Image (cartoon, rainbow, N blue to C red; front, side, top):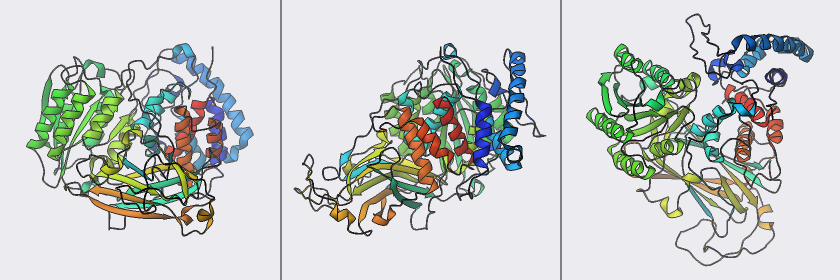
Length: 604
């Protein structure tokens, strides 16, 4: 029998000592207050049972302990006494500083005590799409890499949920891990838009931490943040799953709290309709004004779970309502909240894809919020959001709901660019081969880049997005036969040609050589014709002292590769990730939480 080796108290002491020596705060760092992290109360950290937690007006917490709380309390007191002596040994003056205490509280909450293997319930009822890792491509044969934008974050919060429930790194389903969604959960200090395009674009190249013969190329984009109160009017339809499978505490009750948070931020210029679906479909609110909060909240709080899951008819009804209250130039959006378990009417991924693909032409966006465990249908929810021109988030606690629906409300609800595509053309004089990390289900055919009929991802106000390539430096200047796509760095090339072995003289010639050119193609939210911008990446993008953002993104990517048991991660381990994170400035609460998650998943 194997026990978890996570020691919460030691981790707190060690982290507090590490963090007190951090350098200056970057522009992307968050406030670092406990409310910013998706963590549980102290009581939850000592029981396996879920706890309903709300902030009282005086800032205190209401808590309810699970069975056996008395024994747990006795054990906690004993551990707290040990903890006090250890913290004193580590340096009481440093540990008890106000800043460290705040960080300690933020990071301590939500990390479960060790449990035994027989306590674990397998995720047999959960469904994830199977994806194969992208391989390395030789630039001479495949100079173009084309993919759709993705700002979803569901995979990260779902994996976080599993780790917090006590799963080791090798027990998490590999298909549940989408590295691009792990990367894009976090904020980065990226260039802001200059007004010419909706995006600011940041590029950087540095050594790859898990492969000494490779480099990491990062391209990041960011959009302008907006005050939601100053945004165009919103026509929102809450499409809520109230079937029997939603009865658990982490499903419908959490859903109700989440949509109550969103309602609190709506105004009189907004319209809200509510559609519920179980065995049948009901419209329980029809075009209420956003400032009629009592009416909206009464409808939300009166929900209960029972019956089957007729999601298909629910989607059709929601689109009909959204069309009835359509606002020209406004934000017209359906927000679907579900565990994804559809069992009546349209149930297959193909049927759902056909329905949503047809309906999205109406100018109505569909975003998806996932809830719950055990029977989570991640594959269906991701597909619905992708095909519905929306984004997909997974809500595992109230603080995550606040992050998605309040703090990042503009990014969640306000699209600034749709059908966003990337095409990177690599220069064979600088790059021998490359591999896009993540985005496996977002890869597009090279010819689709300029095809405006091809669907791609949407980006909201205040969003940031990171893509990482592992690249192998080279200096191959050979040319082959001509193909029908005009290229910048190769006058002619064909697929499946053999690569000649020349030295890297051309690559060493100077910093003005370009690694690649990044092209971004997008449509404005209410337009059907795309615009295109391109950004050359000069040789001086390489640095031996990478930014904190690239270092952190590399840790996230490497952890994701380890979770997926990737063949490309070589002989590195979770200890390598922990060591690098321990040397970084992690004043951003979400980054600190990630550090603790990596340690817990690795059994530390």
